[in-house]
Each structure stands twice: as C-alpha cells, then as structure tokens.
Image (cartoon, rainbow, N blue to C red; front, side, top):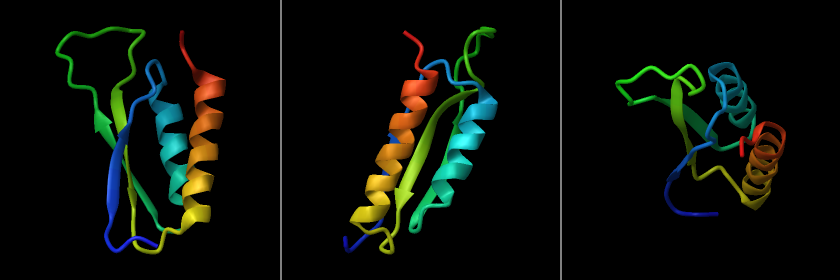
Length: 85
C-alpha cells in the first residue's frame, strides 16, 4: 500500500459524456478509488467532441494492488470498446 493518495488524469478521445459518466461510476465501485470529470475546455463547439475532456482517478491509501488491477482492466475495456481511431 502507498502512504499517500495518488491522482492521475485519463483522456479517452471521442468518448461521449454519458459513457464518461458510466466509466466514472464504474471506477468508483473499486475500493479506494475516487473519480471526477474534467469539462471540455475548448471554446469552439464540435459535435463529434465529448463535453468531457478527461477523467481524474485518485487512489486513496485503501487502494491495494488488486484495486489498481481492477481499474486497469476497466480502463482497458472502455478503451477497446469505445476507442476512436
């Protein structure tokens, strides 16, 4: 276990707002994990661009290696399912 919270940002280009919300809710079910959505900063509207720029994921001291592995698997699922290339 780590001695302090760790926070990092994840960006999944093209992911719709509803899917970002679903992802955040899914991640919050993992013990020791908190999330927050970062709104799109662009001043220009683009229909194909999400209203969300990225997602913060924060691990608390309660997050163990199993929690981190679960987060990695969840992110991998969403990347594979919703990736835009």
